Length: 331
Image 1 (tube, rainbow, N blue to C red):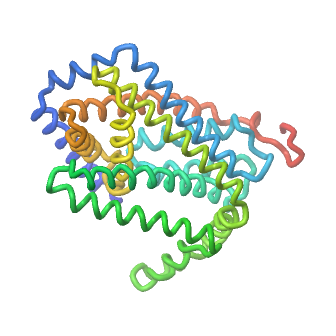
Image 2 (cartoon, rainbow, N blue to C red):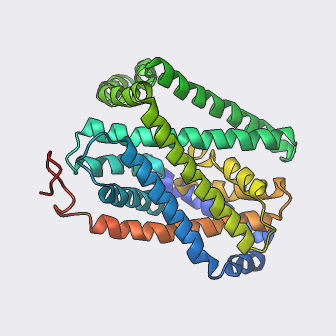
Image 3 (tube, one colour):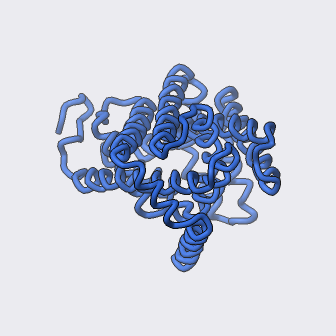
């Protein structure tokens, strides 16, 4: 995306946040955010735990002894820093992790296949939670009238994604390379070049999904733990804001927010889109819009706090201490 367009979208996102704050009231939002107090450290800790669990999932996809968990953990925190501080989302953060894994003596195909497989299984678990939350909201008719069509479309598309992942796992047939080649008439030689480069990566991904179901289930179980950590964090935030704690409310809001990262990936950091969805979901479960916006802002602040640790990890990443030779000894 061109820098000028990114700046325009970022400015539009800031304007939406400003409008929401103006509509709800800056004082009301500030009072809620300040109310969190010392709980903010626990919130940051839970999110850091979430990142560490995602690192465990990534490490579990690697069928090699060349990379230690400590290295994967630093890579995962580095990816978090890239995602949050550059406002690029997973589209730069995930490839960045692949590059860092390649520097740890993995082949590019193996490194990127591991990163993408972990992200695919993470997305599958997230999508399952999203479908459950959206289905409840649609069935209970809790969403504003104008949001129903969009929520239904998102639920259908998310279900289709889950069906595609299941198809690839059961049949051992990849879908990404055929899709890339199908776009050749539109994108020209770039599509064919991308398909050719991605063939070996997708082959490794499909091998793990189709031929190693136990390892895939283990990774998926770890991703469930990561999602449970986010739900727990949201439960803690609601309690810190003085809202009666409810696991069902935390599950619904966490599931309902899942699609934002994908649907609004073209918006830097999903700024404005994320805040709007949080306010809509807050209203859907009977909470004031101010609570939804406060939750969005608190989560942005804790992401920045954890990303700062990621910057430190990225800064200290150089050196040979983490690299290992083929026998598993340090080099």
